[in-house]
Length: 424
Ligand SMILES: Cc1ncc(COP(=O)(O)O)c(C=O)c1O
Image (cartoon, rainbow, N blue to C red):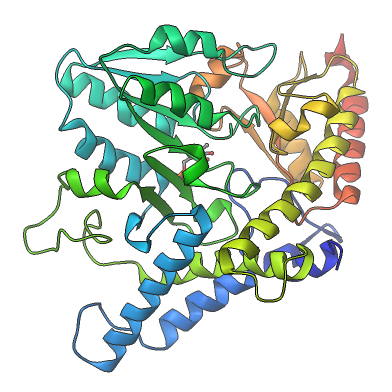
């Protein structure tokens, strides 16, 4: 069956919201998507049946434990881990990165080096900068071009040295939308023996994730960006997770997959993440053209590919419309032939206009989107827009429609007419 966006929209209760007699347009997805019905149902199930803490000898605890193992297995399929033991969950990508950076940093010595990027969200920058301060590490930066919006891999060569212990890099940018060649970055980092820590928060909602082909050591993403609850998942290479020392209480087990979990597991969030992954699987089985007995991993990949193909069309419509606006600068890859190297998250700058004023105008028109730096402090600074108030970010995803893109572009026209003095 071909991609049926109306059928997919029906899976998202949140999309039914109305504002001013019209459906609200959700283009705030890069900050947080709507939640798939399967995720909600799984959470309700976890909270209303077999609700018990883990590790007990009684029936409800045993059932709760089985559901936790199901969440690990689903997440392993989502990222293509070799074992559910390589998965763990945490409060957010940022919280997981603070936790893991401490464990990883115990192995580093003063004078060791790490590489961070000018394109990353602060969640993959500040934890490492603070670690560098604590342990006396030298920080090198991988830069991107504000003209091409891609990394200059030559500068990676200059940043790497035999003392490089870690490269922290984003898969897709929450500002420019660029999808980076993480496999190549990892290959170069590995050639000097560095660990590769990947932030996949913005790619997971739009692309199949495969830690084997990315060649990284750790990958983290946030379920609330990929249609699940406000919680995050991490994958780590088994040898690394086993080797690291976890900051945790003595009474808690050091065995995987619970080694990096502190305190009581948020079982309802884990159930919701499993439900969100089942949403990808459902799309794959219904619109992804997989054979009837396809594995869950194959169905997830097919689902993510179907979503990507569809949302690429939305990106084209959006970028074409924005490119026709006089003076407006799309801050990301814009040519049709380059769309395969980006997610549909599109930021722009309209010179002479405050991004927050545009976002407020859109909010009044029932169109949710974000303005500002969106925690992309490094990229927005590199683009020279921090002082100005950042960017306007429009983030469609697989449940949005071409008609919604047109509604946004019409609202932007209305905004420009009513604020035309500032165009001068
Ligand atoms: C690319 C990227 N990395 C990290 C984060 C932080 O995620 P969390 O809120 O789970 O810490 C975000 C959130 O916007 C993001 O877009």
